[in-house]
Length: 174
Length: 406
Image (cartoon, rainbow over all chains, first blue to last red; front, side, top):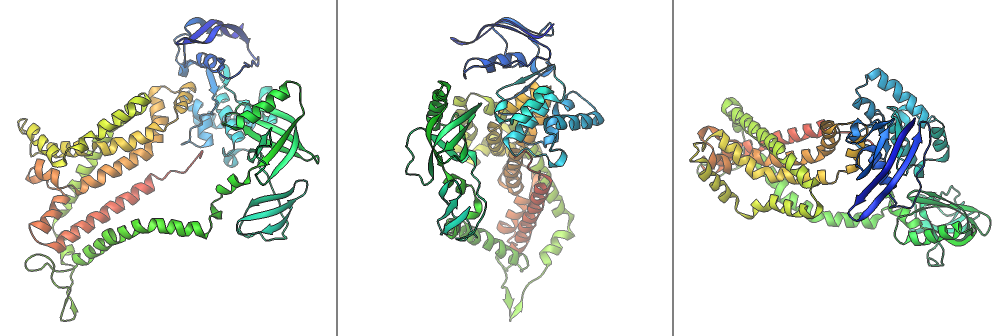
């Protein structure tokens, strides 16, 4: 069964049809890329999947369940934002562990998952030495934060720009 | 690379493969020295035309490869002598976009080899290095800060020192101060301090003042936060008007506004009560809490709240985990702007409060104007200043948070 099904989704902003009758179906484990010039509706579609926007027509289904009316915080869908949107008042570890804390996981599990996830996105730099000063490091943190609570679906809004190729390949593989 | 020339303004470097490069001066580098030279890709500009020939460092080359990476594009440019330079250009930057886009278009049209000019703009890099500010800018800085420094020395530090001395002097017979020296002997005492600490009433008034200031600050914060948040979240075109409304009360005189409270509170039998004092204090100081809070909240990146929501945070969690901690600097400045003036305020307790509601401000005013005991007034002022400084120091220490993802 498709993990995500988008059925005849249309979204208008005034006279502008940002998304016009889009249907597609994405299988579990699939790496699906939306390509197009800026302003063609990629972000609008992602925002509807994440729950920040609702379609005017059509419907979205996650593992067969309709997504309509479910707020973003209740959807097992995480987004890596274009600007990364890292919390500036939290450390790298606090940022990455945020989804686990929201899910009410206990400290032991948070520590274990944190270690696993850091190994996954940035095996050569870990723990205290890991900082988020550079763009690439920031994108790794944003990615780790998106992955750590094992969402059913991970949305990436123009994320590869700052990921170095090896890192990009590694997490694609994972 | 070898440094060919080092002057006050610039370095002339001889770089293998690139020839001569003019770089900003760097302290400690002498002509003839050898060293490393790094070129940041984002400092290299690529342009299709010979538009930047007047810049010091430019090279002719061909775009061998480019990679579109979302908001930036990386170009690999092979110079005529075979050296490959890497340039990183923002796709959104005005001006730059034209040249980079033309490069993309020509490349995507099949012309993978494109003639271009690489310009390395080293001057912008220099501007970000603080240690390179020369003696000239230090003199300018000093000159600019001189008038405010003088003002503070003459009208703040000097009076404070006069008060310090006055607090140890004896009061004059008809007000003012007794002479500092009598027959060549210093005419000083610790009398006022002994007096202050001998009677609990002063400590009690200090304590009450701090409680009134704390209550006022807390009520202001509770009232101001939702308002500041509402203004910060309202459409941009309405915000200036709303901020104007917040500061509009300042247009009418402070005393007139307090007299208006007398008219309001009198018939309600609330005049001359602690409630009246706090209501007046909150009313007068509320804008000083709203404005710093609004300034802070307005700058918050809405993407952070979306990210928190996306990652599973409900509305309340989003507020306590994201909005509130990020607004702490605004809360601190608002608290300072409300708490400290309230501590010294004497007009409001005098007009709205009863006999039991006098605060330090009233006490100090009384010493100078009614009791003519300047030394005691000075002592009270100094102790108040010290208490505020201790409190400010403590809150600075407590509120000190490490810069994290700067």
